[in-house]
Image (cartoon, rainbow, N blue to C red; front, top):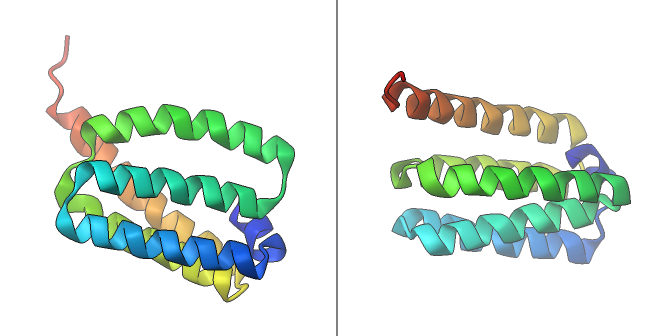
Length: 127
């Protein structure tokens, strides 16, 4: 998705992504769960729109809907600044049209999400 966004995002798309990223970063610093998740949803939607790929948009809508439920329930507010920094890096690389760096930044975000998911699963009792 980020490769397409790097290639296809318009200057207006990039301006929107950067504005939402600032909102996400502010919400993360405040540890404001509702504001943070609203900004994160807006960011995901804007990134997908900036990719200009209808099939990808449909796929990502389903994936984001499922992941939002999990993360709203389980993402600890103390992780918000680190996650916002990952999202900010992705947007920065989209803005600079650097596909390889954007993909690497997504890998960094996924690494964080994997660590957070493992913490959630480790806390759950075995049935």
